[in-house]
Image (spheres, helix red, strand yellow):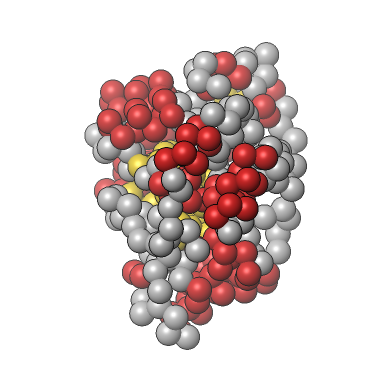
Length: 314
């Protein structure tokens, strides 16, 4: 069983997110293994999540158990953290990621945020002194080198605005394949989607359900009256309506649940669709970005306001 197909750039349309609160290697390993058994083929991690190790173990176990024929059947994404977003630290960071994963390559390697911190600053809280100017050109050249060496099959970015993407495209030899950003019915990213379609960049949605229950998330998506009414009329869950809406935009999406019934539920978004009237109702939901990245903003840092971080797009 396939997790609902792949995008034109080869990224599976539905991926399993693994950003968990606190290191819990065995639950992560077991959940990833079960997800692979259910049909997930895209595994999304990051150096900052500290879940690369158990994902690598689960992937190896999946091959041994015959759940997949080989490593090549899986699409593994990881991200370089802000403390390694320095031109001379990107390649060593990827080598550590590959060592953690026990893999020879990642399918997609991304810049986690358009932010640079002092080397070694991996855990919050962060202070204004931790932030340094982001050398986009130098960092991207290092990302391109990772790709040329075959250590990353594709390279991309996360949390980039239209303006930052435009800057990146002005000098990139290898354009980003993917921009992973927050997308959900409460933050629909219409402007960014149009820009990315024009430039051939695949959008990948994180927090498609609003990250309810996390320290930075919101219940505004899952508690939306409009979404509840649509879900009830279709005999679907609110989560399925949200995920189907993202799916119909042409975006890939990352879902994070280690509960088996929810993992199954999150795959059940094909074979049915929203009506035009339902899409219109969703399009009128008031918009508000949930993950605003406030911890990267400081009056003494490179980004002195949210407007500077997001280039006025929120």
